[in-house]
Image 1 (tube, rainbow, N blue to C red):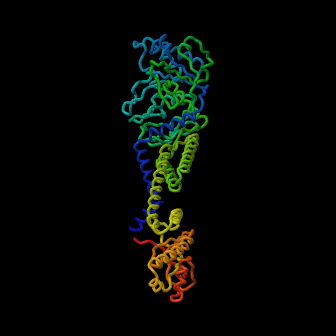
Image 2 (image 1 turned 120 degrees about the horizontal axis):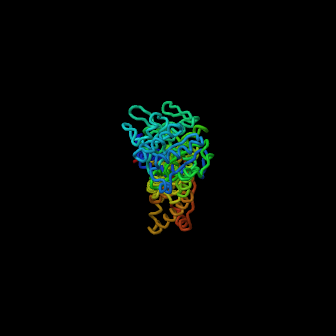
Image 3 (image 1 turned 120 degrees about the vertical axis):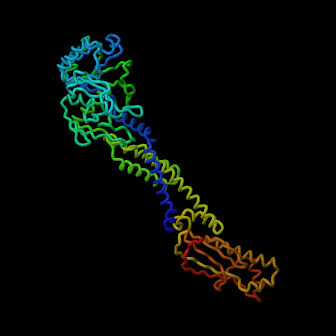
Length: 545
């Protein structure tokens, strides 16, 4: 138990514990969804950068019903005019026609022109309609055209998952409690063009690409609604499509070549129709344009093998966040200078951004904000702890040595503290200590023959000269004992060397004119000498409490 407590006093262990604590804090905040909105800000920015400039797709053509069309032809568009629009386009032999308009009831309600519209539906099997999905118990909330009821492959739902202010995901299909599968409008259109689709486990294969099923905790999502088979939209699709108005078509201002071998989508673009969606790249994008973008992504996946954006498993994401948290702790442990710390933290943030961006370009979403936050918080907390620990150690060392060594020696001890400090106490180690003994011979007898002031002058000059010798060897006077003294020395190597001055009989030292006069005065009766001797032996340096 004592060893365990000692281990937790070690700065490296405490720093690691702090880093783990920061990771637990960030992981907990992420699990509670507190970081989700910030993560989506970064995700949306990455989407915009990856999408690049707006381009066009010549394979897809859009017919939008505008405010001018509503003013001229009424809203909803009557059945006979809608039939004329569909037949005009169908006569040019397009690949498929997607009717992104609810048509579950006749317009007008008396059904006077419904037969004409039904005839166009029946004669053109490449027309795909829409319906609005309700829930698993009641899947059809707003119905599809009744004429298409016998052919389920000719209609699909046009719902989109919506969270945090934008559409970022799309559906491939949904199912009800009876295991009936309903394709999305974009998927139904793509399959109508002749693209093959096959479900294998949790993956749906379409052409050359595979779409894994989106899960509620994928990437930056926390407890998202993951019903049906969803996927992340890549928004690499063009944001501009060749577009005509309803009046352009009905007034014969569009040539048949504009429709031939194209996929035509018909939808509402008038503001009064309220058919708009917000995406990370567009605000109030017409629903028909969003369906065109999703269709483009499916066509690219089938033809070129473009895969949707995916992410790693939840344990791997947590390991990724912990890695950056650990790196932040390492930075805080080793870096002290503020400017260098700032530079290293900026470099790590730049490296993290670059890694996440490169992965995102290759359709892989790594958690960015949680990793960045864990890295910076860990670096800040560990740095604060290490600075506190250094201040505490410095105070302890200064308290131990300030009364026994010179300020220069104390500073040297602090700068090289790692050589002999362990935790909060000196590390026991074997060192060589040099002991020096010096004293007056016959001091008591001589001092009895002198006046007290003369004795004090003599002793003070002697001790002053001896103190200079101690200081020259980087020693410090420990205490005075009459005509003797005890001193300690801390050499540049920082191995503690003790100098203890006491009687001996080797050599002599001259300490000044007044001392020599006193010495000459009494030499005939009392021989006086200030001998010294030094010896070195190994000792063990430690501390006791």
